[in-house]
Image (cartoon, rainbow, N blue to C red; front, side, top):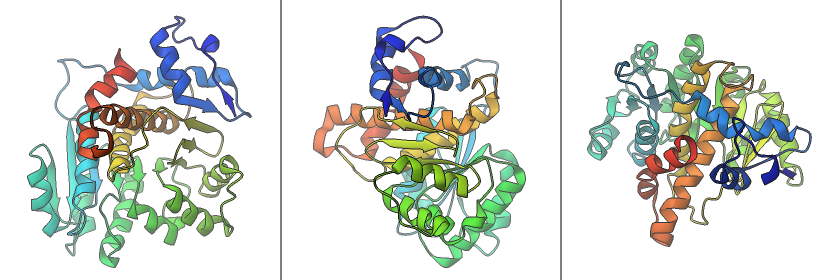
Length: 335
């Protein structure tokens, strides 16, 4: 592993002490790839963020759909959806079961909640909204009920037909581990497994256990086996790969691992994936836009974790992290 040194970091031709500190603690690069390529990653994230202007209309900066939420799990879709709004999406939709809808609505009036996920026509109901959505996040609070998983499968298939970026997390990854062909070869998909979910996916695709001495190699192989999908392997350091390269996000967070952090990441990633995809190759300097988006979302989630922990320590929760999204985003990408 080769870390990017302070003397090498120059963004837009100007050295900045603040950027030095961010870069130094935020990423390293797999030794087979150039350091120069990595120096600009934060600038690439900044490049894809749409400017705020009075000339835009509501919805233009992102309409994000969250597919998940059942009787047992109402917090996860809320955290994903509210994080999408806090990052900068204009509208955030939650497609959940009927008995979860009122609960999720009670968390925030900002969310548009559709109680359709357990209805017989769930796939058709969600499909009618897909032309109005820029990306979908599938999995937060989904659970493993066979009916809900079958509906999630149908929604993934319809989203692929529309060419919509898809972020798959939590029990959406359980579905993919059972049926990898559902997402295999779809280049606009991003998977966000934790260690256990990664192991399950790896064994499903490669028929071997994960080699704990070669995390980078395992990540590359899994991405390639899935058709070079972008994968974010969450952990002490977040490893991000599209089967061609591995980015390592080691931005300082904290030692607090409260529930909900993965949902904040997936909701943030839903927005950044849309922005990066929309921005085009000229804004990402030819880089895979979903790699850029994933690195931005990982860095942002870790920064929120760090800031909230500084205030609350051991008592920190995901709700505290959500409140830090605005200042963390500004510190990383807009100052």
